[in-house]
Length: 67
Image (cartoon, rainbow, N blue to C red):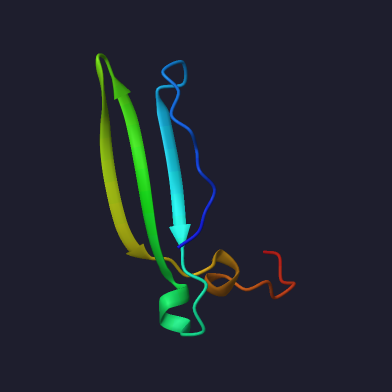
């Protein structure tokens, strides 16, 4: 799994990193793990979310039509 690390910072009070696979299996390419941290004085709250995410362009492909 790879992704950009969003370093936690008490000044910002929030950090979120999304990790994804680089698999040849199409179903695994949709698999994401998100690690979100909220700073609630005096400690960090950590949430781990696991989900499938279809790319936005695959949900609403551009057809050139503008209403």
